[in-house]
Image (cartoon, rainbow, N blue to C red; front, side, top):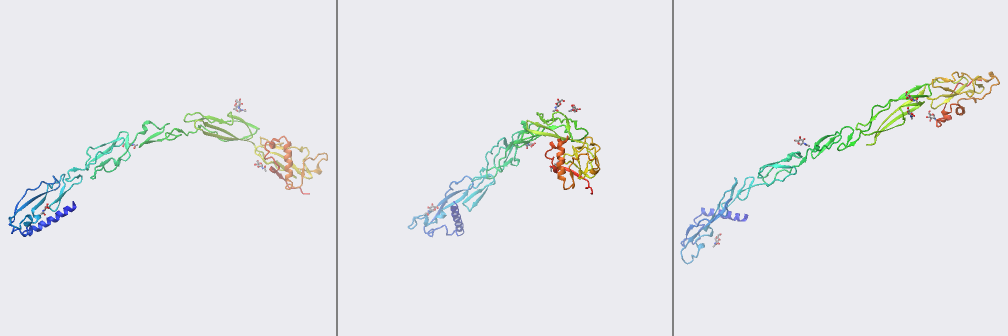
Length: 432
Ligand SMILES: *[C@@H]1O[C@H](CO)[C@@H](O)[C@H](O)[C@H]1NC(C)=O
Ligand SMILES: *[C@@H]1O[C@H](CO)[C@@H](O)[C@H](O)[C@H]1NC(C)=O
Ligand SMILES: *[C@@H]1O[C@H](CO)[C@@H](O)[C@H](O)[C@H]1NC(C)=O
Ligand SMILES: *[C@@H]1O[C@H](CO)[C@@H](O)[C@H](O)[C@H]1NC(C)=O
Ligand SMILES: *[C@@H]1O[C@H](CO)[C@@H](O)[C@H](O)[C@H]1NC(C)=O
């Protein structure tokens, strides 16, 4: 096609040239000798196209004398001068403009949105795709027309910027398809136990009330609660025991589930001896296994006695453990000294609950043996050097304690009752 157009173009230039030098160009050298003359042009052939630029031709014949050497067309004229052609039906539709190549070829340049040889076709994008849970408005699908997508009620568009699409000059819809998602998931009340529901596109979110968690607030994370937990109590007593009463904590579950309570004191009062006691309540919620604990302490201590002084020329040994609850002491004398007359050698002195030593009148001085009546039996072990003989004093003390009426202090505390845990105070060694 291209080649042919070029040939036609060259031919046209040649014809133009011939007209300028028309004297000879279309005539053979024998034109005059053969007595040539042109017939009229025949009529134009029908146009090869009805629009967009077709082509038509016409021809003409020559007349010549019937002389020798004058045999036909070529003796009068060049072949080219016997025919002619031109562009026809050079019209375009829809505002298209005709473009010509020389005098024999033409085509339509179409306006945007039209196409075809004569721009007779309007560009169209065809029916737009449909979307789930939505529709579009717009009934014309040709060039530059717009359609707008909408979601059905209860659905929202996840990408609203895609809602409008335009038919492009290339015959396809611009942009891409929008999508519609369910926007009222909360309508089915998915959040349990007072959770607040927020609609999300295609889903929902629960914000749970206190003590609940999980996607739908279905998980109970509420432990039991109590109304109060008694505070710790420290009691100084003058008796061996004390009856203490307290108000038990009341456990409940804000969610109304059952609660089991375990406690280490069955009643809310108890006759406590001296010591430190933990009172414990543990509430368990079997439905979720969560617990709440209330623990408080009751410390019962006897009144404390003033420190005992070691006697002159002697020593005092006391328990070095549990001193808060019991003080049991014994006196010892240096060699050559002895307990005063009337003071029984196996006497132990203890601090009573009232804060007074018993017996209340322990002696204050070991007596030089020379001054004692010879009849007295000496039973306390004697020592010469307090520091060096501490272990033997302590061993004696432990042995004496175990034999005394206060042996419970040792028996109940076997881990502590030993000669390394005796507190011993000596007075200065007597000078000879
Ligand atoms: C003259 O030209 C026409 C058209 O190109 C062609 O069909 C014909 O054969 C030619 N005649 C001669 C004698 O060259
Ligand atoms: C859905 O669209 C409506 C109206 O624009 C809006 O009020 C609502 O919040 C949207 N819902 C979601 C889940 O985005
Ligand atoms: C302790 O006191 C409470 C209240 O005063 C009383 O009910 C309880 O019986 C007493 N317990 C003992 C062991 O004395
Ligand atoms: C609790 O108190 C009741 C009556 O007051 C008594 O019978 C019971 O022995 C007490 N239980 C304990 C463990 O102290
Ligand atoms: C002495 O008694 C205390 C308790 O009062 C104890 O902690 C300590 O371990 C005891 N020491 C020895 C050596 O047993």
